[in-house]
Amino acid sequence: MTQPASFAIVDLSSHRVSTVIGMAPALSADGKTLAYVARDETGYDLMIGPTVGVQTSVKRTTLRLDAPALSADGSRVAYQQMLEHDWEIFVADRDGTGEQRVTREIQHDILPRFLTNDRLLALVGEPRHRRSYVYELSRFDADRRLPGARIRLFHNNTIRTIAPEYQWSPSPDGQQILVGAERDGDTVSPQRGVYLVDLRRTVSKSALVERLRANLKSETALKAAGTHAFAPIAAEVRRVLAQVSTSRIFDYEKALFDFDSKHISKPGNRRAATYLFDTYASFGYAPEYQWFEPPSRGTSTGQPPDATTTQTGNRTANVVATLRGTVNPEIVYVISSHYDSVEGGPGADDDTSGTAALVEAARVLAAHPLPATVAFASFTGEESGLLGSREFVRRAVAAHTHVAGALNNDMIGWTNDRRLDNTIRYSNPGIRDIQHAAAMLFTRLITYDARYFKGTDAVSFYDAYGDVVGGIGSYPVLGSPHYHQPSDRLEFENHQLIAETSKTTIATVMMLASSPSRLTQLTVERAAAQTSIAWAASPEKGVVSYIVAYGPAIDPLRHRVAVTQPRVALPALATGTVVSVKAVNARGLEGWDWATIVVGGGAAHRATTP
Image 1 (tube, helix red, strand yellow):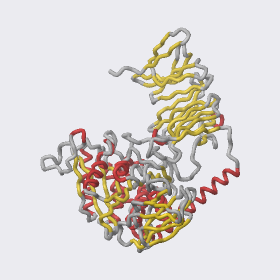
Image 2 (cartoon, one colour):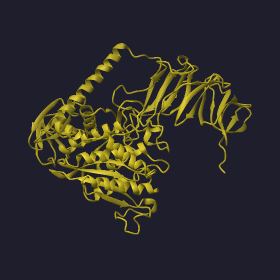
Image 3 (tube, one colour):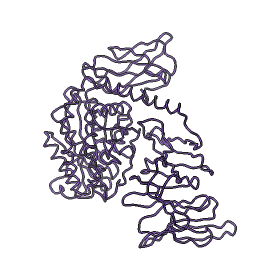
Image 4 (cartoon, one colour):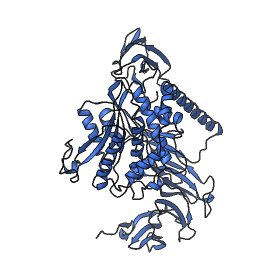
């Protein structure tokens, strides 16, 4: 039998140690009051009392309680309570009276902390994508949240980028807060920033107007660039997207959902693989199974099971349908999602939603092959450690497959309101901007972005092929209360949202597969009178010219020249000048990402703000 949770209290004056049966202990700032949660077979108790003395139950409930927090003087207590599927924050007086519900957000509201007796700090969301809010308790009534009572604590001042937060620490007076966050959403490395938020400071009207103007300028530029990029194929994209069917997407979802758990250990996994294989085949593809045995039971063989192992054993399989390119078939773009789920849930959002969008993309593109090859990859074993994507990439690398770009969609169907919005999770800003443009120009989808892909199948591509990753997933933030729960069911999905996300993915891959890919082997040589730039010729057929742009880091595309050979002589460039190059094909489509190099800065790299 599992031992009940306990903690110890040490009286520093007497060195007496007292053991308390309970969990989540919290002290008031003066150290005189203790709060914790006690649990037995029938429910939970919120316990409060003197730190050295007897604590009594001030709230008894069958609902889960956690994370109590006391005001500085111990007169008020805040705590999180599970209501149906998600945590909500409550506040009460020390004796449990005057209980007040603070939050009504369908995402998890967790870890309350008092800044002052009337000001509370708490987090919203799943651990990888938390955001902190300040609640002015004096502006709440007993039944509903009043306007202006909740204030977002930290943001990065753009209308697109999501900034995950991970921890914070308030000053003793509650006026300043240190926030540990990834302000640009950059999770390629473990580096994070620590930011000081001063609650006494206000933003002036002029500063707010300037911020809005800057956002408007960047949005206008983003849309203009996207309109220019898509212009040669815009009519073609619209014709293809007109075929996307929300009812078909629901049918795919329903079929996969009815297999229940699709974890690699469950029968639903094999059934889902068969369904996907047959569905791809019905569109005219010649799909393939990529069978392998998960590492826990052996090594990957890459061989299909024989007749005696088809319905038994621990093997699982990716299902891949390939649309061969008409001009550059040796260059491959991958659209992927994982069809498996956690062991204890049906996975309607995670990731039947992404799988349905992928299948519909394969259907509408089946009769519309693109210049480059597109692989539609339904991965297995994501929930068991990215097994399927690792196997796909292992085979691709062994076969010397030239994967130029990868779009991975995961958890795209849950919404927190009626807005059709989702987040682009990317490593490559060229792909990110193409996806923003695809959404703005051809769909109803509202897109945010985060340079984030850790813990997803996109990592497998990043590890093997580098900075070629894009995709969509997880609402503006990973906030679904049904994430990895048995409640991840079909009725919580927005099927129109999945359709709009599928359209965005289709438009994006049409652009990627029709355009020159990013150039490689960019070099720079400096002489007294000139700077020579060279690069490997574009691998795509039909490239007619190259655009060379150069400028300072704050304006890297200030100057532009066009050349027809993979080299150019520029005026003598100062150290630190950024040089960017992309190819242009006969249809007028420019490369979807710049290859860049910094003069005097070493090896070529990708510009983060082209």
